[in-house]
Image 1 (cartoon, rainbow, N blue to C red):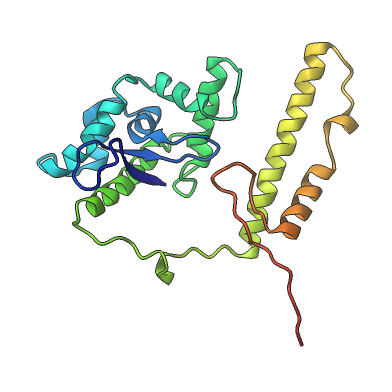
Image 2 (image 1 turned 45 degrees about the vertical axis):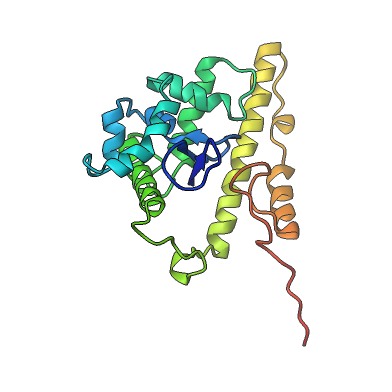
Length: 236
């Protein structure tokens, strides 16, 4: 999601306000201009075309000025990807691995309903810009805020997609552990034992834990939810 903040903490007016986005598996909020440049849209004009549909709209353009100034030091895609990668879980790795990690986050985790394959950056940039455009309309008082309690703005997550998403996350963790074990054996010249590489309880324990506690998703991430599953009390 995206939100508008204020450097000075003053309410009202466009002075000092800037917009940041929250990305999955990234510890801190990222300036929206950095996200656009990481998606491959470097020029200010290209970015503004995705957000402000009328360049004569001076009020909206002024709201975007602080965000452009904030990301002025980041002027190419590689630097933007490295900026995002540094704020992920990749601590102490090379710049190339940080860039690769950031690319995977943008491709597979950011707006997955738009697409998770290659060459989806343009679609995601347009949708991301549309989100920011609606936020700016609310900030300018041109449209009402969405009613979060309205049923039309709710998303129903049923048992199938919930369990499927949880299994996908646990299977990804399993493959990451196997890859790490194999890489360690290759680096140290040790014999590879598959029984040690594949931890059979990773998926089973993860499913049991989520069903027992109701905590759905990976801990310390933006996507974790509580109270998804509860014990059924039969009172009659």
